[in-house]
Image (cartoon, rainbow, N blue to C red; front, side):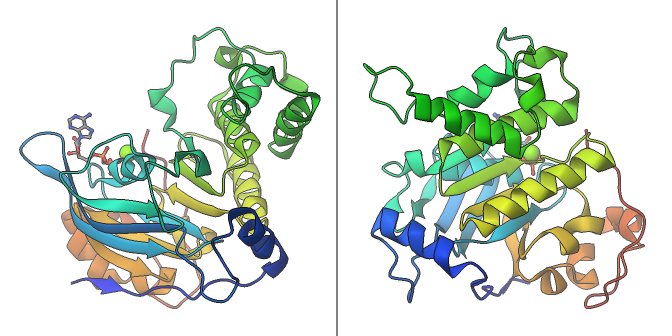
Length: 290
Ligand code: ADP
Ligand code: MG
C-alpha cells in the first residue's frame, strides 16, 4: 500500500521563506518548487536494491522524518540526495536543479558511528569547516566566516568547548558540533542521519530545539529517526521506507497501525504502546538503535 500525501507547506515563516526565494531566484512565494524531488530512485550496492523506485517530493521549510526498520534504505536515501551514491535508475533534483549542480545547497550530519573521532581537530575547527567551500580556494576565511561559525556553535550551545578535541566530547556533544558545522554552511537543505541516537534526554531536547529554529529560518530538514514514539511529536511529515516508499504524509497518516505492522512485520510488538492514529498520547520513549 502506498499512501502518498503531500503535506501542505507550512507557511509559518513567510518572511524567512521569501528571503530564501530572493537568494535563489527560484521560488516566487506562490508556487514553490520542491526543495527535494526524488524520481523513481533505485539504488543497489549489490544484487539486491537498497531503494526501489522511490518517488517523493519535499516542500521547502519542512521538518521531515524518515522512518523504517534497520536496513530499509534510510541512510541510502540521504546519501542519494547528497550524490554520495549513484542510482541505478531515477534522479534527484534540489530546488528544480540537478542534484549534482546543487551540491552546495545541502549540508549533511552523518550517523555518529561513521565519523573518525580520533581525528585531531577542535570543536571550533569543525564548525569553521562549514565555511570552507564557501570561499574561493585562494582566499583565507574572513572575520565574517569566523563569526558565522561561532554563532553556529552558540546555537548548539557548544561555544565553551571551542578548544576541545572532538574525541574528548560525549556522543551528544559531538552530534551538536556536527550540527554547528552544517548550520555554518548556511545551506538551505540539512540532512541528518539519526541525530538523536545515543544521546541523553536533555541533549535530545537541545537538538530538537536547533532543528526547529533552523526550520523557522525557512530551511528544509530531512532527519532519519529511529524512535517511533516521538516521530509524531517532532516532525511535520514522515517518510516510511522499506526499500520502497510505503508512505509519505502527516504523522497521523503514516503512523497508522496497519501500515506499521506491514513494514515492521513481527517487530511491531516493540511499538505496541504507540497511540492509535490521531490520538496524541505517547507512551514510553524507545531506546535508540546504536
Ligand atoms: P538504513 O539506514 O535504513 O539502516 P541503509 O541505507 O544503510 O539502511 O542500507 C540499506 C541496505 O543496503 C541494507 O541492506 C544495507 O546492508 C545495504 N548497504 C548499505 N550500505 C552498503 C554498502 N556500502 N555496501 C553494501 N551494502 C550496503
Ligand atoms: Mg542508517
